[in-house]
Amino acid sequence: MKLNDFINVMDGIAPRELAMDWDNPGLLIGTEKQDIKKVLVALDCSMATAKEAVEWGADLMLTHHPVFFRAVKRILPDDPETAAPYILLRNGIGLFAAHTNLDAADGGVNDCLAGVFSLENVEKLPPEGLGRIGTLPKDMTFGELARLSEKELNTRVRITGDVNARIHRLAMIGGGGAEELFDAKSAGADAYITGEMKHHLAIQAEFIGLNVIEAGHYETERIVLPRLIERLQREANDVQYRLTLSESPCLRGI
Image 1 (tube, rainbow, N blue to C red):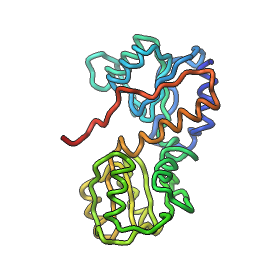
Image 2: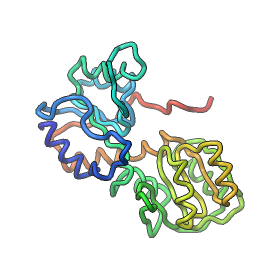
Image 3: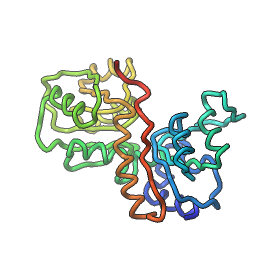
């Protein structure tokens, strides 16, 4: 399969026009004319996943996070920012990213996250449409929701709010969605789940009366990868896909 044809499939799954202005999705390394037979799927292009791509014989790495968000003046093997893409370049492996466009897309990160909690009447969280908001199939306390989050996402959470509060309407953005807590409150959410929360925003969440769960950047986004592979296997089935075996949360408890 030509990489250009694969890109067309990905643009159908996660249209790049859905991406935020500051984002950098799309083809980051490689040429659209190259043939691809094996695609490694991961959240990040890290040293571990880049080496795995080489060892597995991948032609392309498909990641959620772009490895470059700004102009890069040099790509060096001893630079923390460029060491991993340097490995891909040296081995002729392409790199394609689908980031906030995959967050916002139908069936993307936040639809998968909503599915974890079996949300009903799911809508896109205004105004940007990255997140999702819906109703729980059965009301529960905020403490029960926090424990459910740990179980379903295989994570340890941090919370701000009242553990005894009744939760009916739930909003969420996987990954770094701290700033959108005000959108969640405006949309009528009783609780908000995201991957990362900033200290000063947690204080403000408490002030406005929004119960917030910080469930981990990695844990709230990785759930999309198996679903993405399933869809790619249907729409670009002449390519072999592998969910990375070498990736784990870069921040974890001990």
